[in-house]
Length: 188
Image: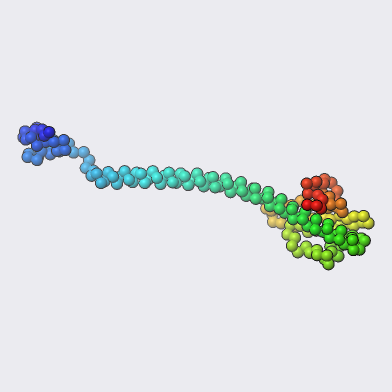
């Protein structure tokens, strides 16, 4: 319902009227002039800014989680790699162990030199982490030793190990000391 203008008393003032159309009297003070489109643009800009800040925070958190995961995986991989290196030594000792017994069956003596086992299939060219040597032979047995091959400075070196004619795997060279029962024997 229209109301009267305070200056000219014309009945043409509504809620949206800011200036009287008849006398140009300012009915309502005009605030900062901002169009609806400009307000929408500002609101959209604030929304985009909030989204970008959220994405940046999410990426920072994701980066920290990734760094922790990489650190965990690197330490875990190093541990697995050491185990794999030692498994190569065990595998090589078992191979030479079997070849020594084959040699004994043919010659009634154990081979004191790995070169004597070559006709039976021995070649150490595929050994990466260990070199195998026959440290001693005697009438009823032998001692095989797996010596770690030197690696890089930051590389975890596997431990030396040895195996006797009975198939016992020792955790050091010389076929003496602690027996590794979990990996001993030839039936594995």
